[in-house]
Image (cartoon, rainbow, N blue to C red):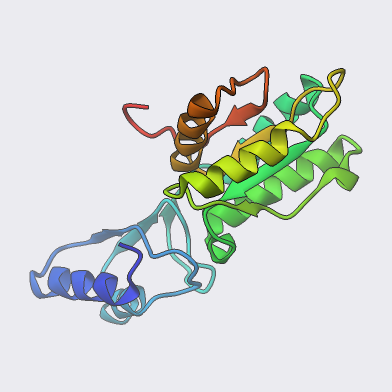
Length: 190
């Protein structure tokens, strides 16, 4: 639930149960958390998943987010796209290592292909707000001349991509004709 206090309580429960180790998906936007610090103090083995904490020297299992977004961006560049929008749910979430690394991969790809001038900060969208999603889709689909490729939208995670697809369908927009759309995370049943 992205609640540091709830994470600390869950870890404390595990410690009281005398578990031999803990797998932690740490809350977003933190360089360390109270619960993880407690694990370190107790010297209880743990591994982080999905993201790492920059102030914690610990093992972690994550996607290669930077490389994944680099390759995603590279593919779009090779296909001829020259207008990009990286979309996230909040600016604050850019502090989350997985999101930060994805954006870094995007920027690196544009720089490597001589397109660094196209780098823009991520756009924030509330995927649960159809009006917000509709407004952004409307802006992106009128940004080009008919001879240009449409805007390529790189969603930081699949929840955003799903919301964009859903609203786009109701607006009569169709990728890739009106905009290109990529997701990331490989959510099940999508």
